[in-house]
Image 1 (spheres, rainbow, N blue to C red):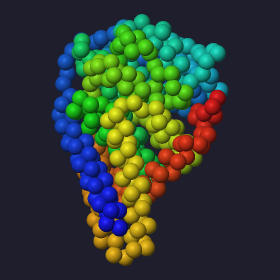
Image 2 (image 1 turned 135 degrees about the horizontal axis):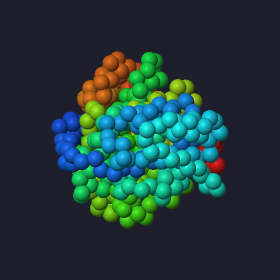
Image 3 (image 1 turned 90 degrees about the vertical axis):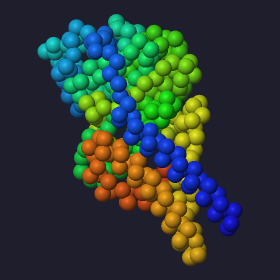
Image 4 (image 1 turned 120 degrees about the vertical axis):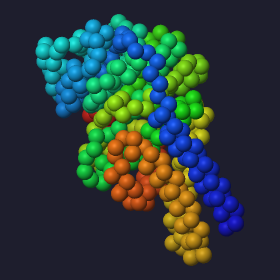
Length: 372
């Protein structure tokens, strides 16, 4: 029991220090966004879509209302074999739009990565900005990209958050994703970025070609994180901008089945990570949650362990709350913290289940089996 206790204390202490460092980095990153460039640079926006009839019009309309020189950006929508009304809606929007929009269609190939590749091949401008067909972009989205893309910047990371809705499922997703955003910008503050998000990501076209394009992993997603790893390994400068008028909004999953599929899809790419710092973060988070789950059982069966177990769990909850308080405050979602305790109670179970199912569960994405 002594050895078990020492392991628990060591792991939980390491976790506490790690999240504390990340929390400090996130806090400082809000005050660290510097505008370097005041001119409207030329930007090509790539939007890969598949079955986005419910969201694509709102996404395109948010680009139609950008506070940006109209002649300095283009929009390239790449259709990945949609089976709904997505293409018709895009074509209808193009007719009445005041901005330059082109629609491309994947033919023989499939996948989001192939859609992005086709979009980049047809891009006319040096800066590539990517987002998703279900995203809503703030009016100063392009202005933020342009202003913070100095000559030395090769990739720029921007904030992303779920739209606010009622209910436990949305709150769970929002708090879970807040932790991801905390890690994204908390690590980037130290010039050691480990995560990004394709919903708000931009990079230089020449830099993409320099690193050999997107990855060749057989994963349905991960184009963003794996591209970041290639930029880091090539020692290309990556910046992150954390500003409230740069937040891209995307809807959370509406059902537990869809949420389950999404998180398994995200977890399925973890085995391909090469960034040692990301592997460390993933490992310490996973290990701490597994041990938290074991504490539940030890507290139930061993009465003498309960005080120690409660103290260890409270130390984790405390540092998690600090990080989530900072992140939800920035995203103006602090009210979701009323769900903090129930989320904390089920989170270790969630982590273990997702990790296990990501190894063998055949999930679906956009109406397509992962193996298709």
